Image (cartoon, rainbow over all chains, first blue to last red; front, side):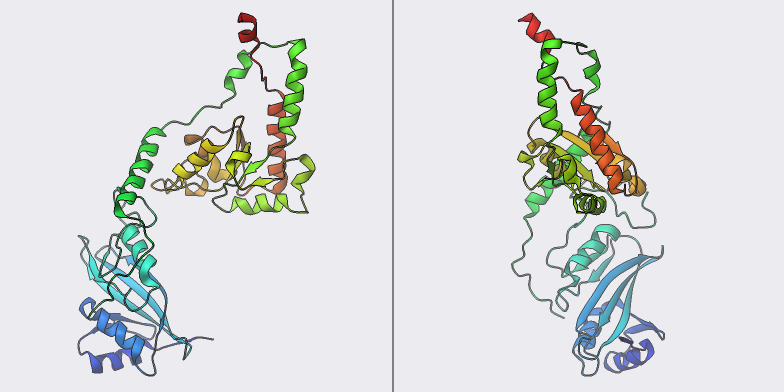
Length: 146
Length: 205
């Protein structure tokens, strides 16, 4: 059975390395500031004892005033997992850094998020629509899509 | 932090994407109305002709007894279709068992499943590749009207009859294999009534 890591404990480790990078942490999750996302992601992947080398999924949620992108990471070596979230405030042209350089599996899923939420991932090798066709207007999974 | 530079990806060029988008938009614009039943005009045909009915009967018997199906199963109704093909329901009893990998060898298209606009041009192409005479069965709620996905109208085609003419509709979500077999039998009955030779044209000559 995969052990779910405590967000608070991991947040403490991250704070030691990158002060001010964690916006919020609880027993289940931790919320990282967008500027620190790539640093924290690399830290989580490469640090001894964490080694979260597998990205289960990336998904996004629309909370009207902000978008939240959710990463579920797990470790093949230690058999534990961690949920990391990033928030992006404002609805106009949201941009977040891409984690494709760290986990290849994020490739299509980030394109899916771009397709359905309109969140652009900076540094993604091929940022374009995946399910809908070129020329489609709007982002269907946004709450204000009619 | 650096991101690995983009390597060789298997994606198509942006140009191709734009073309594909254009094809879908065109098809969507053309598909605002359902295509009417292809056999509606048959009733106007000459009712009886003793000499030619026997030819019709023979041709129709041959056609309805060897309905070969083109593979076009975009979604979950396909599993009922597969079950119907299996030993338990044994579609082969009725001579409609063979699934053809090439649409050019098929005369029946069983549209088992939801159709998205992105897939629509490909289904249209499969239909166009089938040789005449050809028939279409719309299997399941999605194929008839978009089904439970009809409210997601931005991506789902509201019924196959927007894209291709449909002969028989089988309701259900998904329909049971018995329903599918019954639907194909209804289609066979329809084929049996088909008139293959236009008598009026022959008389004019």
